Image (cartoon, rainbow, N blue to C red; front, side):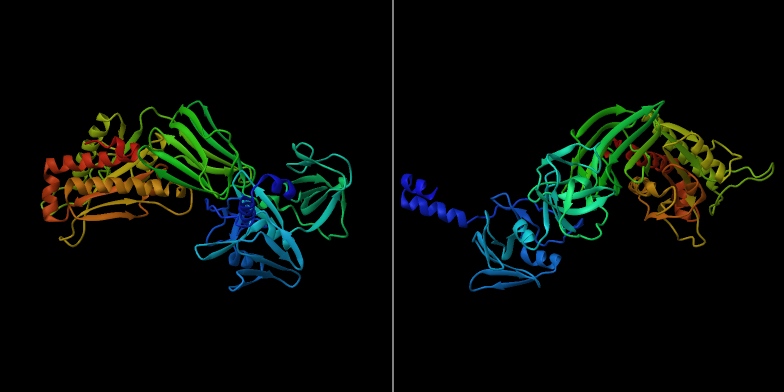
Length: 528
């Protein structure tokens, strides 16, 4: 080849070609994850794909992960990696390396980027006997410590995607071809073709080299699960979104605003979905979007008409995640609970706290609730009150009413009281446990309480006592996101006077309603 080139090219141009062969410069790209036997290797700085389409890794981080010694010889710009059995020598910007005393010519070279030394991953790993696999779906590199070697013992053997003939073939192996053993499942072996993909081969079609000893279970299960399907089912008003993977899924859910969205992040995971947007327009779900958010994470986003509190569960051994929205209502339903006012017997009832001049809390609570309800109704929200006067419902009965109506939101309205008359201000309470049936609503319950508190403080101008968590019965027993409002201290003379003022009460009720509307629809639907 060189003779042919020499006849047609000038000598300076030949020198340029030779220089390019050795000066294989790096072209930094997004970080490339590297796994060793299924465990993510900590690389700082991250690996990258160079201009020769090869993965370059920081040499010291790689040496630490592989348990190798590393030395840097400054005068010769040489990197030496070694262990008890092998030594690999590399030079910066040179494509020739030494594996023990054997010269190897690479198609890329070590480089220095930002004062850190990077070396070609595949060549170094293979020099130390590791199997290397590139996964194009999530742009990751997998390093495996092979458990043994084998040779294909028959003609035209299929390398399959799974352990069994029902799985499609990935490629055809030729007789005598050497492969690396990674694990086993029954009579099938999980193998890696050097320089090619990993897959499965029937054990009776292989000749094992030597006696490899006990083959461990397949490490194929150590790979991040592949997300294979996202579907939406609607039946008799019940809406369900199902995300399916090839292995148990680990996920985190987040609620976002403007417009309302439910975000499901699956990590580690790889997307195997052919489309990244599914138009739904069924029940609360407008659309479902999915993408490979980063090398470790598949993100599934549910665009919603309004915020809801779905039930999220893992089934099928964790391989299937289901999001159940329950029965869809064209209009959201809010249950407002004016606190106290329970009829104890024919002579007695619960007035709640009583102010210095005799103002009774149950009267204030009802007035605030009615203003809130009227405002919500004007915005197209269905409203149910636990009482419109005195009631026979206790705390459990009020929660049961909201549960039986499958409300979207429950808010209990109160006026605070303290033994110290100087106590003043506005607070909102929620019950947001970390475990149990309501744990999935934790962020929603905190969100609802926070938005109501913001609106109350903005409208009333009283001291902001913040959002507090409390194990109140009506909050603990309600199945939907709920909050309990303490508008002001009826025990404080100044705030009792304000609670007698119809204008103050109106502002309080409308502030509660605005907080609920922001919760349901996000700030894009926040009324003026």
